[in-house]
Length: 452
Image (cartoon, rainbow, N blue to C red; front, top):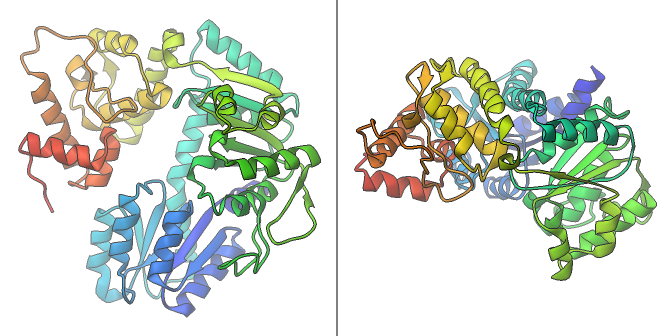
């Protein structure tokens, strides 16, 4: 029960509704359940809050003056807020519109009037996917039995026994956050909060408030006192991902926090004591950032008490197939897919590819296969690699017996994805690993008609 409450405290919810009674009622119910709740009674204000901040769930009224909930939903999805679950709030007369909103990316809708239990159930259901992904990621982290993976597991176990600050380095997609979570889970703080912060998603003007908290009236729009990520992680672990994105001003304050173990809440004269185990991560070379004057050298040495470098997947290729087979089993069950195994050519292809997106790209590739492949055995023609780039596929091992051209296969692959996601451009583009503009260009090139 205590663990569930701690988890809710790390969840942020935004309510956008012009009816004060609905808005205040939702806030009271969800706050009592332990969630962190922000409110907006104006559509424009709500949209800006949704774009500026990282929310787990947004409760959005369909009908509001000036800007409709549908317009807000579209703009949120256009700005790649794909991880935010949106629940539409609707009256009886607008249910068809709410159903259409679900086709556009909303995860659920509530019909007015609704009970506190219905509200709580809808929010819990919206967060279930995140929990499932988190559990699956934690479970799959230690897959692999190469010499490198054995060394990594041993290093993690030894680091977890200490309370030292850790700096994790490595390319995008190598699993830096998963390593941080494992260190926390094996440490003496495992029953305490683990608070991850994506520093690249924090707006510069709100970064200080997000990290250190603020008191009511500290700045324009601060209508209530709020905890920062340091206060939320008190007695637990704070994970600062992409630490190189923090500006020099916040770096100086962060250095002082690490030295003094005190947090300067914005608008408060006296700092607050915190007990936090700090783990930071970056995919950049911090020595280069220091030389360029973008990162403080003294902060670097404070963070890298215990350095841990995560190697790219190409440096431990023996783990590629075990990881791929794990995800094949997981996504086969999740999507009720026909896929059961890889052909020998497919295995060679997976092992030959360079995997610029590392484990994250491998995971996404296997999920695509489980959704789009119609056969029990994955063949070479079923596999496309998008990596971290604009999205052009790369075939690693060519089958001379396959008469279909690469263009034909890609066209069919895109058509299958569009059909699966009911021609929702945002979802299809994200699934394929490309942006919406690239998807539209390819559809135009292949004469694929869009559907409303």
